[in-house]
Length: 342
Ligand code: TLP
Image 1 (cartoon, protein in one colour):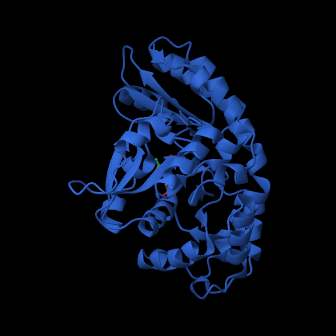
Image 2 (cartoon, rainbow, N blue to C red):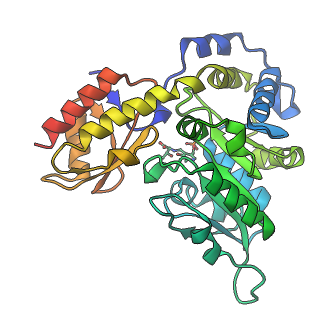
Image 3 (spheres, protein in one colour):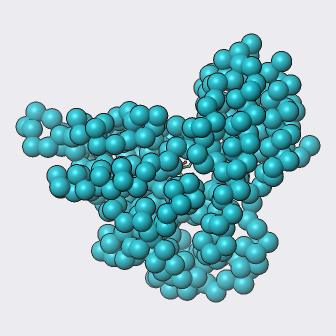
């Protein structure tokens, strides 16, 4: 059976154009910085984000962790939203790689602003560890792809900087934020000291993420990437798909958001499902299953009906729209949910 795969936008397959670009890619040894295609991707990403430099990383997790390592000292704390990916899904890497402790705070509906961050900041108190970094995630995955406004991001950065604190953006889905906010990606990236974004999610590239920031920061980042085993050689075959992702795939993301709306409006009508379609702003839906069956049962029943989705726990379920699910697929998925919840 051909499944409708709503587990994640990470499941997207490279387009034909990407595969052709990959086959034709000019390559070299990227540890020597001699891969022309990787260099082109890095220059393109830096220019789009308005940063001095960028670096290709194998994964978003590695990109985030390189930035945390560069910004912090062992023993410091990192403030982040309690539902953030760095806190929940990166295998406690910030403790292992950087010797830092997460200081999670809860935003309103997943959205952080200075009110929530300020009380968690520790500086100069001899009894407690200092804060070394603030991280922000936009869009915030586990809170249902919620989007943070530019003004809130600017405010956090400005106030953080005034206290001498760097601010990192986990912008895994920055182009979903761009689409929802109708702003240029450089406007979102501007106030941050470093930004990570993924090529391998909604943009459809098979592998890879980027970090961007000041030239000196990225230069130091090359060493940390290598320390983590991410110094790749003829990576141009992967970067070639990344270039197509950045040049051709950002403008179609609105389609994913409109399919997510269709799903959200339909799901909100299903007895036993709790979801406010107004809160679905991008391509991720996180909803509660509070009916005759729980989220894990729903996941199993949907799978029998050819629809894949992820139960985050026994109550919460996540669905993600992307380029490889059509509007008709979303309609079929909705019918499957209606049947499964009966
Ligand atoms: N997210 C994946 C899973 O790991 C949960 C997904 O399916 O959504 N930041 C954010 C906000 C992410 O959502 C992810 C991946 C990452 C970082 C890490 O990217 P990768 O998987 O490339 O290490």
